[in-house]
Length: 103
Image (cartoon, rainbow, N blue to C red; front, side, top):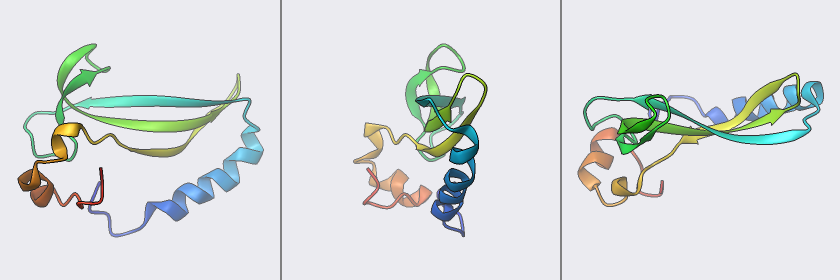
């Protein structure tokens, strides 16, 4: 995910341009999705609350913003949540290629 060869920003921008007029949102929804993980070397994995399991566990958490109405929704922006323990773990950041400027 952090090593993509293409820039996701133009794709996300195009999704917004196409979907906002169709949905005509009445609300903005901020949501999270968690994925349980074994090990420590996937980007942003840490012991944290995992909604998929309903408890604290080793997982990745992604945060998204959705345009929504009572009949439709579409994610317009998303990214991994980088837990605080990753801030000073230079070994893991180097191995997983998380740039220093990403906090």
